[in-house]
Image (cartoon, rainbow, N blue to C red; front, side):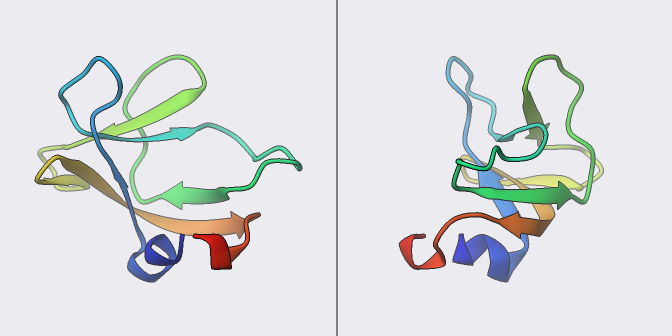
Length: 86
């Protein structure tokens, strides 16, 4: 978590059953009892359906790749986890 706060980047590897790196996150606010964080991404997620948003590498550079990672710039708006545990 601290790394995300310092860098302003969220990273992701390929999701299950894929070889294409993607940043993945659930849509919406965190439930009160769930530890985690909420954020705004600098670019919209890829089109898709369901509760999970995906950002894959794009030609315009708004989502970029490095090794097996996809990366997107984010601004963290809410943290509901202990930063000492991250």
